[in-house]
Length: 355
Ligand SMILES: *Cc1c(COP(=O)(O)O)cnc(C)c1O
Image 1 (tube, rainbow, N blue to C red):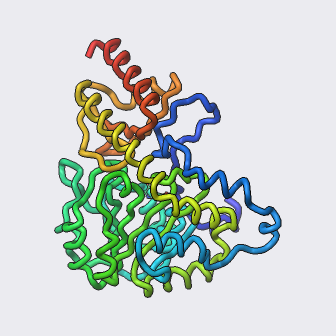
Image 2 (image 1 turned 180 degrees about the horizontal axis):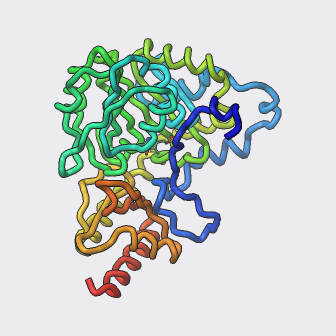
């Protein structure tokens, strides 16, 4: 080891889902939206004056914050924006979790939380889900330095009711509670209204899934202005220009197209409900997903082998080789046609296995 390597920050990075180079792959592994973004995005790209790119972007991203605030009927001083919700969540860990007590989150959840906690030297303690992958609110009612809950949870897709979220927030008014709502637009209830009542609640959402903008990188947090101010102070101590001019313009335009958003999320939801029925008929079991994926297992079928066979034939789903969930596959909801190809493959595979 070189002497200076002793001073390197030791980190175990997050592993994102695979992005295959072959465009013909059926890609059901990273919960992207199968439909294109609002046509408002194409219009911005067509009409944007490249001379705008000469200047630094607006460090406050006002146009984008205003569009988000207007959509949700809140004041812009209650909105923080970042480079995807990963940036927003990372910034929130850095901003709010600086105490000696452990931050609490479920043992099965978005696998970036423990990565940020380790990166920022935040102590944490994971809490088990129950046998149906539900969060147990009582586990979050002990001394802590903060709480993070993905709702619907990932990779399970299971929703925690707003009433139970409120119980957790109410019992923890001395900590910041973050609710990561990356998938909330696919049929779950947002905790946003609770931010008017509880100053310690931060709701985080993203354009990546429901607004088909994973490639643009826009995430946002909503909550009391004191939380938003604190986030902005940390952001401006690190990098003032997180949002590019194109992403500010694109995000604002897409946020205004409510009709397209509602129509495309409804399509994903309808496909999900149909795929649930078909997977049940094939003997799969899963929690009642309120997200754009289904986390399913099948008694007698080796999930890893099915995952590998499908991958070899150009159908990508996500497999986590981790305790508690290694019998499961996480299947993103694609177009109806993609899901039919997937279901056809699974049927054939099971027939060949004689199960
Ligand atoms: C996808 C996802 C995110 C991050 O998405 P961004 O693309 O960074 O906005 C955050 N949390 C969960 C639970 C996710 O699934």
